[in-house]
Length: 446
Image (cartoon, rainbow, N blue to C red; front, side):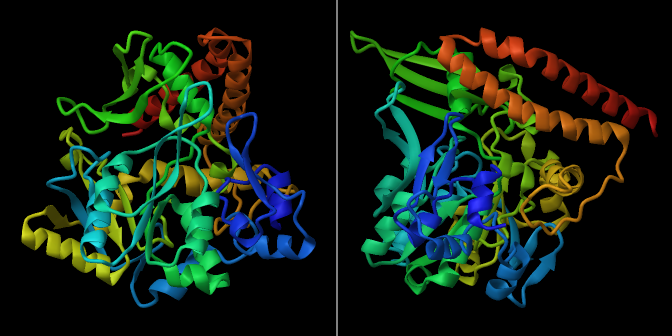
């Protein structure tokens, strides 16, 4: 499967790394709010080169790439290579971050120690669209700008423009991203020494799934934000009085009299089980990398019993780079970090839901896709699963596809969510009934 087939079959994640190979490749949002590459003006030779950096084309997998970079480190089947495993938070950056503020802390330390000249992270920007706001990768050059990207953004992004900046501006860079994006960067660094020399640190975020731009519009409508300009938005505003996994979506608008209006809705009231996969790109259902195995560090939420009740948030870390490992230990000694080691079993447990979907669930999805073009994966196709598990996987595929179509239709016909709800309610009802049956069987099996 080359990049042309990846796009044709709907597996393009829109990372934009192919554009660093050929500027004739364009990365645009489609009608479902997902970034997709367009190869119309690209030559056959360039398509071959672009295929070598595409994370879903047939090239080197995460295990091979990690072996090249982190050879000699400990290895776990699910987590990949690792030098150190920690749980904790940054004393100064915890409040502004999604969980423990660790990525913010690391970038600040890299600037402070002159390890980098630039950092690339996602932050909100003014945009020429109906909401007047966008979220995209941006280049920052000082500690002063780090806080603007210190939270999570569940929105499609692409590296296409920032990689062009790197090519034109010498210096040392740290780059943030989700697992498949980091794989693409490793493949690019393998192909092009310019990026290999300039991108010094890859800071990974453990990812359950990417979301389309339609998800943002859905959240705005659930929070009853009027159609029109949005001044700012936060996908994960902490509620420190509740559990760490109970947070708020927040949007701010300003009326004609310059009065500010704040709209909030809790993730519990949104009533969308993250595992359902609504507004998720197709590529996410064919990814088997949970722990950003090719990144220098993978950071995730501390979804474990010992941390979940602390609403201020705790981060778990899988560290693979020696300098970053020492940075974390120095932070603990200096009192900047609250940090302790954690067992590999706890790291795995914290992401068990994602692992189930990307390992067991992927095996079944690959089985369902036999005879069709799919990305090459480390997981083997299998149908050896209980009936209810297979039914759940099929329903997730239906929910993913139907939700993007339903919300695209809703945005065309008007405000509110009436059309979306009418289409989705039957499928959501069946999914929840299925989950209740699974919980009941689990409870009665002891």
